[in-house]
Length: 289
Image 1: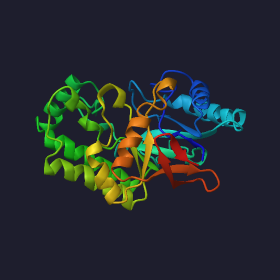
Image 2: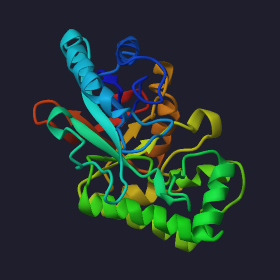
Image 3: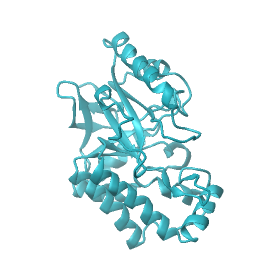
Image 4: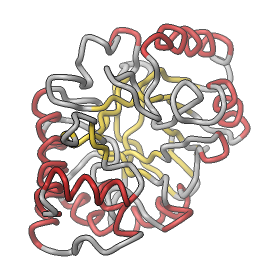
């Protein structure tokens, strides 16, 4: 049986990615992928270094629609957005998000409240700015910010569930540069797993994000939770969060082997006939389509 990969989380020059959408499509075809979803960062109502400008959204959607037509005999191309959840401001079901023109959404939390001057605070910034946010907004209490971060994801899952939950424990990225907290502590493990459990209850797929795998052997969520996810029937898919075309399959072979080792037998994939995601078997060579 032929096997090949799909990737549902990737960006482009419409946001903070490098390269236009067609370059990602051509690279996916070169890699003999079955499916590629382009999911550039959706606009938010304030300036950032990575979100798409609102005026570019119609152009983005039209370009993806045109590429679908151009390459429909070569690859399955899906239109998506990675949408920030910010209470009363942005989310997967906000009026700014044209759901009728999208095949799915990736819902993520990057922004956790704001600095005293009103500037939104992103946990995805460099570690020195993360420290500034922890100190200024959360009185230096790392547990407070982590609980707030996961509570925002749970709020999104309850109020505006996306189809895919993006990098659910990405806040741990800062532990690469400095020890902030023990990822094996009971309180932290409970924050992660209660979020993953709620995603499963809401029929939201949890992505296994491999963006940092080549650089640091990191996945989001951490591989520490893979066995538990398998035992608790958390639906999963594999995504590389590609910001360059050459990163479309970064870490896939290695992480797929880890998933199989921990008893995960299926990854959820988009089914064109139903417009929904369904579980499919896989091995280190790809998905059994």
